Image (cartoon, rainbow, N blue to C red; front, side, top):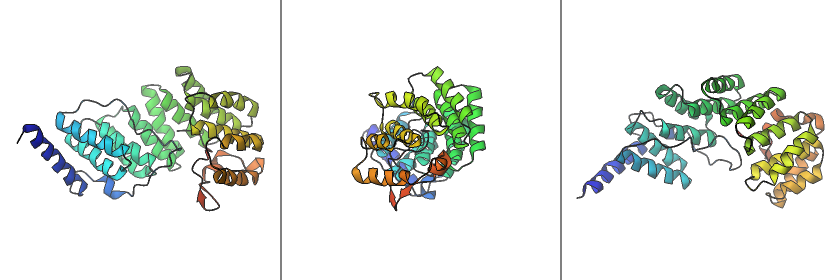
Length: 299
């Protein structure tokens, strides 16, 4: 038997061990019900950063975890990343992956636990502070989220952290403060589409419709623009009262049924009802999910 083959047996045996729930570390994947995420809602990237060096055995498990995640098997991927962390507890990369997946799949409490494990290893890890803040944000704990983002920004100002801070203040309906953070982020990365979109949407919620559309319309034509950016433009048109333009923009990415549901809902609202807090709670229209409707800043 070759040495490499023997190593693979050991690795796969360890994987089976952790997935069976017999891991020494608490098995996060068995504690939560993983749900597939809505593709358009950005709850934090599952690409925390450049992978640090692992030894050969750990790298093989990590590669399997990455492939498993890419296939959409999030529960198994969490177990594999967890095994990587057990094999190399001084390297937080795998636990960052777990936190990002849990945030993305709507399990912010468990995500927060994962990010706290990273911070126990590295107190200055910016991605962990941002991820923990996003988990608080998802649970409506804005001040705790802002505290995490502030601690991260005290270490280093990054576009991601500045955007997250802007989102937190937008959720508190503090538009001017939110916009200051977006603009500060754009000073670091003027081509950042997420910061531009969120800045435009924030102005739109504030009633500065012409200024908002002047930012959002050209952005929607950018070759790198996604459905998220175009739906933020549609939302801005809706907030401005131009439902025809909102409908036309929505049709770029949505089918007729979803467009009809979306427009019936927004047509029923009066201008005074438009605010990010109320719209954030709207997840279904007539009992059917409308996953492509973007009403909040991109995190």
